[in-house]
Length: 233
Ligand code: ADE
Image (cartoon, rainbow, N blue to C red; front, side):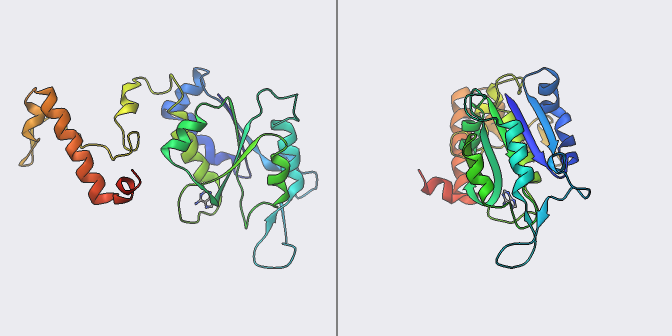
């Protein structure tokens, strides 16, 4: 998979050289490129924002640098095969979930455009739609200062689903959200720690009983912490 990220703070993404995603990049499974939006400015101050038409607080990201970035990373129809999925993180977007991550992990080319300030000139989204499938995606119902942290989270959630990134694919199956429930609790040695024993059933060697206990724990936790997940069933 190829991923391009456009940001005015490219060093935010230095963390993606670490851990599993760093290894996936070294192995050539994940082809990740981070670009500074200011590379596509032409004035002395490398300006990326301006005051909003109609007035109001804050600054809006200018369309011109974004247009050039999209021309470079998502060339016109016929030149790029396949068309990329172009993602703009936004608190006004659709909610990012494990389902979104699974869907995006099947794509060959993702382009992430990180907005700052009060947002990006709306015409940029319209133009981007001529270059690929545009998605506005929110990390959750809260406001961040910009899209960078949201994109980091999305790339990690998507990247670990690409075949070969997580060494043991079985570890992806029994996680929170993969089956619509929260994960069951895990324990390791010692069997008693600071007066706290590991649940008996896990030491029993009875695989059926263990599976049933884990399922019950998943349901109990989901009921207690995230009843909304069960209501959606
Ligand atoms: N940018 C600012 N807030 C955001 C959020 N909640 N999700 C995605 N991008 C954002």
